[in-house]
Image (tube, rainbow, N blue to C red):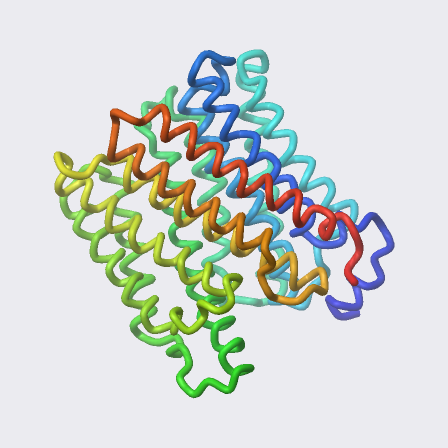
Length: 388
């Protein structure tokens, strides 16, 4: 049977009929809860959720991998033509992710077992993606496999950071993997979806085809984040990040983004890539001119901005498309797009304006929760029901 026939033959619970369904829903709910939990812990609540390490871990290794898993377990079968990961196998994979979230909440009581339990999901997920891509001889997507492995290794490094004195290597590895995934997959789907949308409207000027410009931007991004991961305070790394950011923004100008403003579901993809270019440049500037640009500004332009906005954009589009709905943003979708961008702006200003940090952190957390909680409320009924 084809991939589509195998999906249609599935007779189990709808939530486990596609990878995006459980992972997008659970990732959104967890993200909406984790941000205010951290603020609560930061200002007098439980110490475990108030720690910086828990916050960083749950954003980079809890929320982000859930969305990546939802996207890839849905997309890879289409790339390879192989049997999709659905039903019991998908439920087991999702359960490993959930086990990690519970383990990290109770890490004070579980000790080393928490790190072990948390590491299982990314290792299993990476193995699944490697198996499907290689078995399907889909060599074009080997870089995606490498990024999933990098996330799994970064998570292990994060847990070993204190014991081995890695100085934040795990978090930087995860951010590097995230930047590469955004540059690679975002750079693939954004011009492709834009081209299809413009052709439907008989436009004659279309996004530029993938060319040497894109290859140079991807290579520059890879080299820059690799240099920053290994030497986060070096001037060459800062310069490399600024160059990579500029190339990402130049690449974006070739995709006709201004012509998509009439459809927010498409325009948000262009805006998310702009966050990536801006974030890379800002992170580089914080290394070269630390007295002018605080380091956290670039970090949060990438994480809250590029990662937060891209994940939500992909979640909304994939959910509508795979659930048989029109690819158009309704009022609720536009509202959550506005909330996530305002959350990123508030988090960025908090890094630039220390005097107002508590207020701005609370505002950013609230807006973030409104965005992802709003997704869970607006799209949850679609994700739990069968496709129209």
